[in-house]
Length: 499
Image (tube, rainbow, N blue to C red):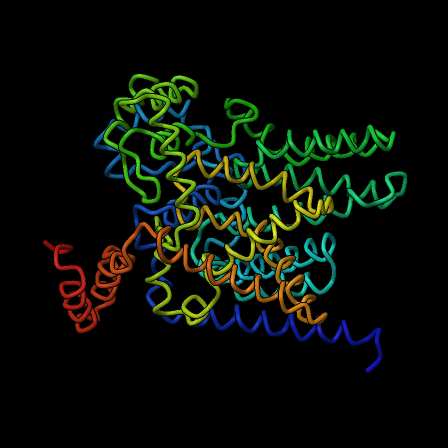
C-alpha cells in the first residue's frame, strides 16, 4: 500500500467503525423503553421539545405562539399568566430555537431524527479531530478522534430529543474553521470563504445555544486584532455580514410576531436563580426555595434577578462567590448529575454508554495538555484558551449538570490528545523518565477525582425516577409482569421512592 492511499483507507475504516458503533447504540436504545421516554417523561425537556416541534409543524415557521412548558413546580410558584409576564410575553421562544425547528421536520419520524442526531454526534467527533490535527498535528488528531468516538456521554446524549448535541457540533466546527482562518493567507479567496463560514457558524450558534452570545464578542475581538496585524479588514466584514444573514430569520420572525428583535430565549431568570440562589445545589437539579420570591421581586428582569439572587445569600456576595467555587469543584466530580435522563440508567441498555470513556477519565490528561500547551506557548491553541473560560462562565450561570458540562469536552479532548501525543513521543524517543512521570500524574489525577473530589457517594449515583417511569411504560403497554418486576426492584433499590 502506497503512502498516499494509506491514510484514506485508515479514514474510511475509522468512519465505518464509528458509524457501526453509533448504529449499534441506536439499535440497543430503540429496542428498549428508551424509545418511549421522550413522550412519557411529560415534565422533561425531551417532552417539551417534542411539543414545541409539533407546534412549529402546525403553526408554520413563524411559530407565533411557541410551546412553553408549565410544570408542577412552576404552578406552585405562580400561575402560567404570571410566568408569561416574567418571560416578556408568550411570543418569545423558551430557548434558542434551531434544534426545535430541526426536530419539527422529523417530528413524525422520530427514528429518523435519532439517526440524524447520531450523524451529528459523529460529525462532532470528526470536527474535534480536524481541529486537533490543525493545531497539534496528525497523530494527535487521530488520538482526539478516537477519544471522541469512544466517549460515552456523546452516545448517551445522541439519543434523547435534547438540543445539546447540535450546539457541540457547531462549536467543534467553529473551532476548526477559526484555526484554519487564523493560519490562512488573509488575502486569499480561501480566507474569504473561511471568514464567511465563521460568521455563519457563529450566527447558527446563536440560534442553537445562548452561550454563543458570549462567544461572538470574544471571537470578533480576536479576529479584529488579527485583521489589524495583517492589515486586512475585508475578512472581518465577511464575518459580520454572515452573522447578520444567519440570524436574520430570527430577527424577521421576532419583528413580525412582536418579540424583541434579538431575543432567542426567555429562561435566563429561572436558570440563574436555580443555579445561584442561597439554597441552590452546586451539582444537582433542584428548585431553590427562593425561586418564587426572587421572581416576584425582580419581575423577571435580568439585573434585578441577579441582584436579588446574590442578596438571597446570608453573607451576600461572599456566599454567592463560595457557591461558584463549589460549582467549579463539581466540574471535577466523577458523578454524572442528571436532569432529563440519567447516565446510570441508560448504561443498562447501551454497552457503548456503559463501557465507553467517561468524563472523569479524560480530565487528568486534558488538564495536563492544557498546562503543557500554555507552558510551551503553543499559540496554535489560542482558540482553546479563549473558548474555555467563556464555556466555564456559561456553566456557572446555572448548575453544571452532566449534559451541560459535556460542552467542555469539545475543548478538553484536543488538550488530552495533545498530552497523550507528547507521551507517545517520549516513549518512542525512549525518554522513559518523562513518560513515567506522565503516567504517574495521570494515576494521581484519577485518584484525586475518584477520591477527595468526589462529592456524591457512589451508592447514590442512581435515582428512582427513570425506573418508576419504566414501570409506568410497561403498564401502559399491557406488560404488567415487567411492570410488577420493576416495582419490586424499585422497592428493593430505592425503599422510600414509592411511599
